[in-house]
Image (cartoon, rainbow, N blue to C red; front, side):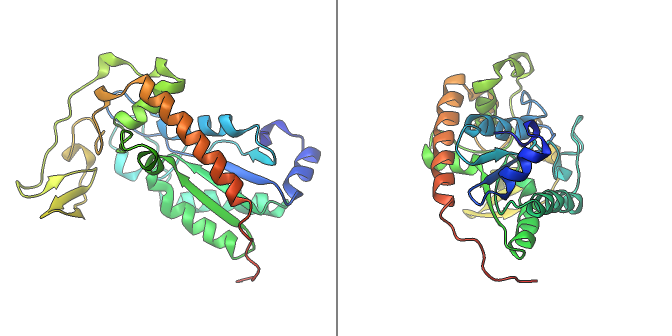
Length: 258
């Protein structure tokens, strides 16, 4: 069920039902390596929500296609709300739906940069009596299958998009990654993460000073296949369905913290 498809009278009944869980797909519009579409981070959560939209007592809120993309802003097409704006956006969405009776929320998130803002807004609504679960799909996928390693704008996300919009992946734009280490003893392993003597530490740089394509952290985009994407999206969908069914049994907060 989609919130946008309902009239206000229908929405009133659905949102005030204590069994209802509102799922909010959230992402970003930003660079995703040499071949990934700018909408990767919201398209994937949107697709997961399409797949679970027929579950009982689930209502899908409209997709939020913008997020915290400050570290990607120097790539053309990136749109950055910034963390403070994102806190306000998520807070307003939670508060509006809470006003109409919703108490349980799942955020289907496609972008790690959004996490601090979502968590801040989620804590505020928790103190009002609501409950939010945050699903970061890219970190869960490798736990389901180590052959689905995570990164940013690389093979994992490229494969995911291939599963439902293969037309958006254009092989003619494939480039080999050229990674620049800060020193010979600091090995880059993710966007701003390096290893020193086997331990991770962040050195904050412009992404283009780390990798030319903007995609880095797992396997290069050229390693992506549609078969990988289909298996991963199917596996993740099953996990999400199972999690939501378990999440229904979590008690709402009983204390008003305001």
